[in-house]
Amino acid sequence: MHDSASSYDLSHRDRLRIVLVSDTHGVLDDRIAALVAECDLAVHAGDVGNAEVLTRLQARGTEAIAVRGNNDTPQKWSVAQRHVLETLPDQGLVALPGGLLVVLHGHRFDPVAQRHDRLRAAFGGARAIVYGHSHRQVSDKSARPWVINPGAAGRARTFGGPSCAILSVTTKAWNLTEHRFAKP
Image (cartoon, rainbow, N blue to C red; front, side, top):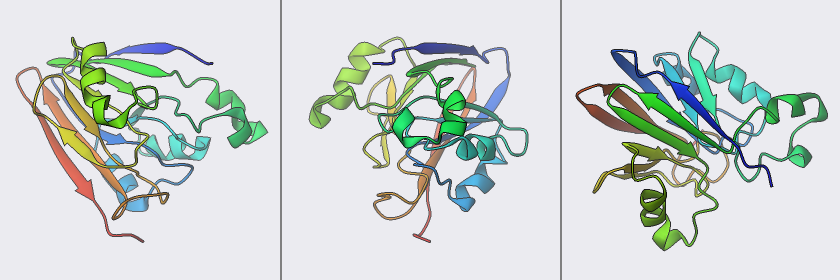
């Protein structure tokens, strides 16, 4: 098993606009790519699928942070891109203005009915947790930390169409906006 964590410190920034994506499985929807271009940071919660997705997340100078999902395995990535796959940690800890964002794929937090409680118990010091895996868009702000699944940002199992979320953060306030697009 590949277990690793990476830390990122962006807390010195006054404000950030962050696009949250997951479960692209090698395809980033063009409409979501357009939203990425309007953001300072792209965060991918796993099942990236290939290096092209990461390149598209950074296409217009947007910083990108991505973690490995259960389908991000050497067998599913081309030999030529495996060096990129090896750079993906299992989780990311992102210090932002106003708090910590935890990024992981979520597949190790079963059963589904207890996933949010288990994530909150594991990362209680965070302001928000973003995960993927289920392909279902969820924004649970009923308690802290918030638990957010941006849904599938590609074509695989989008449950109504590709989706993502935009998190706008300052030291004083965090706001989340969900986006869903019609199936292509």
